[in-house]
Length: 105
Image (cartoon, rainbow, N blue to C red; front, top):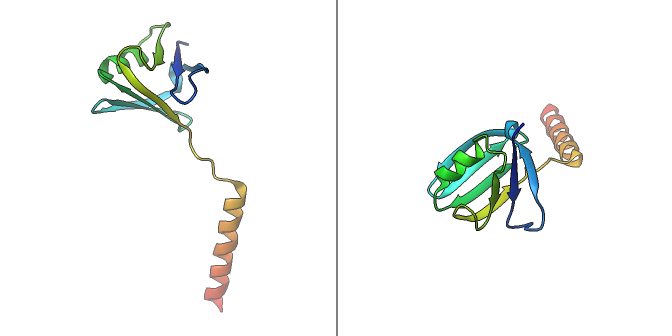
């Protein structure tokens, strides 16, 4: 599998590696390329030419590196999905049961 190396603005000392199969879809709005991953995380790349960056991300170039300062990239961020905690689910179930009990009375 082809890999993509990504260095985000938040962690410039860390290299992230993804296989191309992990990309679900991408879209360009203005100067921002938004890539949705299969794990529901989102990679946003702001660049002078986001189409060129998209071509590289979705190509088969094994030396692809997405990092601020290269390819006219001005910002690289990753947003990870918020995982709902088990306590939140339990609280919701308890509140729902209490509401249903009130309706029965």
